[in-house]
Amino acid sequence: MLDYLNKPYPFNDDFKHNLRIILGISLVVFLFLLLYKPLDLSALDLYDKVYLLLGFALVTLFSLGVNLLVLPALFPGIFLSGKWKIKYEILWNLWMLLTITVGYFFYARLTGLYELNFSTLIRILLFSIIPVSLLIVINQNRRLKMTIHSVDAFSDGMKNSEDVMINFPSKYKRGNAQVNARDLVMIHSAQNYIEIYWKEGDELQKVMVRNTLGNAIKQVKRFPHIIRCHRTCIVNMKYVTRMRSSQHGYHIHLDGVADELHVSRSFAPLFREIYGKLHEPELFQAGSSLKR
Image 1 (tube, rainbow, N blue to C red):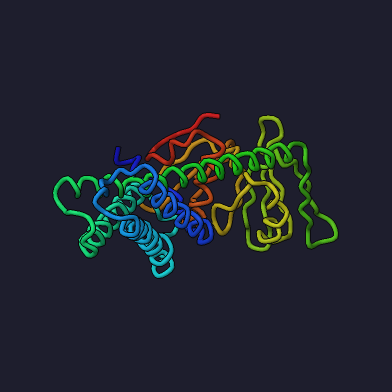
Image 2: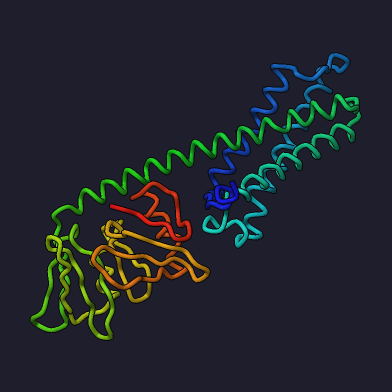
């Protein structure tokens, strides 16, 4: 359970998208209260009814605006998608529920148009669930669409890498290397050279080319599964056979490569993302292994 709560969760920090959501949810709250009449407002005239219900909608607008637009802008470090987790998302939704409920309560008390008692508090709490529930559903649908689009694009990139030759030019007139993208295992920086490893049948082959890792990255950037895991190393995620986590980060083994490779913290988020698309995402349990 704790492992699940600690899994990464992308925080929705799209300002324009959130602004549209806030306006839409506030309008839905107003129309719901006006048309379905869950509150007993029979003692109020039309003007007071509209005044009260419009106020509830404005409270929703203000509360969601502060929580989804203002606070993420003031404290961006807290809401980074790479640091946001499922447990934070749950607490954040509960916080928004609390702020909306308190806002409804004080607005009703301020206007004096609606009698405040225990039954009223329960009703207000139930009304507060509506905008938060809508927000969760909208964000989940958006996340699902983005995930499907991302996976489709990733799959297309994988398919396009079949039988594509990658050219690694040398700074010398001779010494260029060409490797099939599907066979490339890793590229390692070795002072003024790069060591290119690839599979030829069951054998691991290696060639050294006079060039930099930065130039090698430019040659492989069109392939989504070939990524940098360290400042000195590029790996093909298809060849990850085993990995483990420690207090220093992630460590991986590649098919045919004897040495264990370290994944730098700066590259860990992208590593997690690509790994999750290639394999079932039971991510990075200590000592976990993967058989291809």
